[in-house]
Length: 193
Image (tube, rainbow, N blue to C red; front, side, top):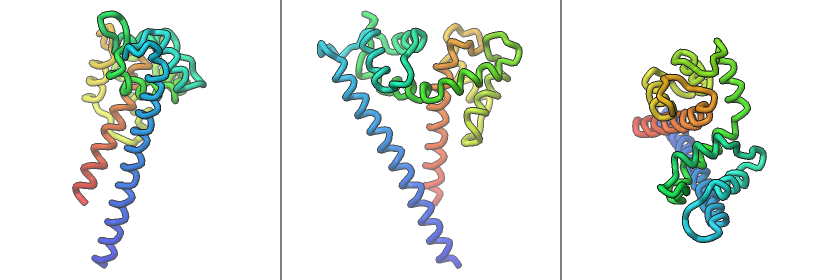
């Protein structure tokens, strides 16, 4: 009986390790694709990207969605140097977050409308927390610390609410936070085995 449990434990551990390796490979492949696009669109070889070059990169990454001005402004604001250009060494993680958001953009727009129960155009704490829980889909626990961290990172005007123009950044960041929580849980679980 103990031998059977040991075999089952080893199989679970191997399965988890396989999933972790597949996830890491996916991230590395994605980084490689982005790096190739950065090289392709850095026509002058400066290592920086203006708004139109960034638009071309994002469009090439996701042909179904053309980046809107708000998305471009968000990325430019987060990554721009003093001259207003995006530095390539900082761009990969933001593009990955952008891709995650665009994958589910229509869903998030619908969720925002659903949770904006008073029609104010912004999500207050309890509304945002409910939206975060729905997005997490029971994959991770969601608490007030997550809410505070998300607001701190994405509430641009420090109003204490997430407005419709901030929801893109908030959900991209929240998905990243979910992935980190899941990875931490897996790592802890593997250590316990």
